[in-house]
Image (cartoon, rainbow over all chains, first blue to last red):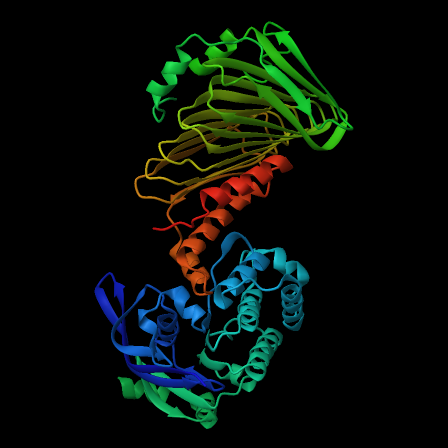
Length: 252
Length: 346
C-alpha cells in the first residue's frame, strides 16, 4: 500500500501585486484504494492543490511537504512525479498541435513504464479503453486536444488514466462542463480504474453531482486555502443541501 | 527588399561570373504521365510568362543562363516524379527552369538541392487550365552555400498548385515564391518549412496576386530556429485586386525560437482592392516554447528534452503532413529526427 501525504502545505503564486498565498497549511493523507473528495467554493485553492502536487511551475511551495511513501515529491521534476505514479486529470487540458493521440499515448506509456509497450497488446488495450469511454476510433489519429469538445477532452484525460495506470490520480474538476451522459461515461472510467487497480483518487470538485457516480470514503472541505471540515460521504450530502455559505461566513 | 538579408554574402555570388551553361538534368519516376526535358533559349516566348525578374539576383540568373530547362508534364500521375539537377557544385551558377504542366494534367514533382551550392536560381511554373500540380523543393545545403532566387507560378483557370519549399540546412537560402492567380477559379497553396541551424539564414518573400474572380490562396510557412545564430526572414504579401471578386485568402507564418539569440522577422501584408471577397486573413507569431504544452507532456512522464522535441515536431508537422512528395516527406522526417534527436534542452 502507498500513501500520498501532504503536510502543512503553503503555496503562493506570483501576481502583479507581488506573491499571493493561496494554500495556507493543508494536511491530507491519501492511501492506495481510497477515494477522497476535496470540495470547496471558487477560489478556495482546490486547483492550486492539484497543480502543486503535479509540480506546475506557477505554484511556489513556501513551506510544508508532499511525500509519496516517504519520498520527497517536491524535489521531483514534473515528469519524475508522473513516473513515480502521480497523475493529474486536468480541468483545461491544452492542445498540442501536430502530435496524434496515439503517438502521445504510446510515448507517455513508454515514459511511465520505462519500456515501450508490446505493440499488439497495446493497440488492443487502447481500443478497448476507447470503446469503453465511447470514443470513436478515429480519435486516435487526431492531434492531442486539438478541436476536442469539452467532453472529448475529459474522456481523453480518463483514457490516459486507464492506460497509464498511476498509483494516485488527482481529478481536477473532471465533472465541470459535462452533460449527464458524458459525466456517467467518465465516472465509469474512473470506477473501472478503481476496481481493477489499487488506485487512490483525489477528486476535486465544486459540485456534488459527480459523487452520485464516484463514491468517496472521505470528504474534505477547503475554504480560503485551509481544510475546514472533514468527514465521510454524509458531509457531501450536507453540502448538497446547504452549499458553502456556512463556511464562507466563518472565513470572513 | 534586402534590408534583412546578409547582403555581403549574397553579393559575392550575384556579382561574380555566373556559370549559366546547361546542367545534367534527368527525370525519374515517370509512369502514367508523360514528361520530357528540353533546353530552350531564354528568348523563347514561353519564358517569362509566370513572372519577370524584380531583383538583382534573379536578373543575374535570367541574364547568365542563355538556355532554360523546360520540363513538360502532361497526362495524369499521382505518384512522385523526381527532377534531378547534377553539377550544381561547380561554383557560382545561374539556373533557369520552366515547369510547364499541360491543361488537365495531374502531377507531383520534387526537386532536391544538396551539397555546396552557390547559385542564382529561377523556377517558373505554369499550370495549365484544370491541372493539379504539387511541386516540392527541398534544400539541404552546406553551411557555406549561398542559394538565392525566385519561383514564379502562374495558375490557369480552375487549376490548382501546391508549392512547397523545405529548407533543412544551408548557409544563406533566399528563395522567393510568388503566384499569379490571373485566371478564374485558380487555387494555390504555398507551404514552407525551415529549421536553420548555426549561422544559417533562411529568407522567403512570398507574393500572391489575386487578379481574377473566385481565386483561392493559402500560405503557410513554419520554422524552428535551432541555434542562437539562426536567422529567419519571412515577408508575405497578398494583393487582392479589383477583378478578384469571391477571393478566399489566408497567409500565416509561425516561428519557434529554440535558443536565445536566434532572430526571426515576420511581416505579413495584405492589400485589398475589392470588397466582394469570401475571406482574407493573415497571421504571424514568433515565440518560444509554450510552457503549458511542456507541462502537459511532462505531467504524463515524458522528460523535458523529449517533451520539447515532441512540441517542435508537432509544430512542424502541420506543414510536414501536407507535403505531397513522399520522398521529401520521408527525408524531412529522418532529418528532423536527427536534428532534434538529443532532445532539446533549454
